[in-house]
Length: 92
Image (cartoon, rainbow, N blue to C red; front, side, top):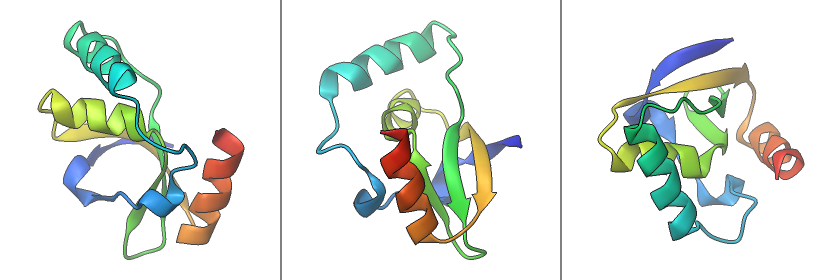
């Protein structure tokens, strides 16, 4: 299920990012597209009951922050940080 989530409620843990690093050109492109009104697929979160771990959508999340958004569309799954990591590996 996709819902609107406060960006500040999302735990960004670099251990869950399968890519080696963020790409500045991709961030700039995504930010520009957001400013033009483009809608991206939701980010993917894993909620362990305490934290909502970002498992997929690091560039989308950072682009949303860059353009001043305080909320983002998210697909949230019940699960642990480890389950989020396993999802991240499959997604990337």
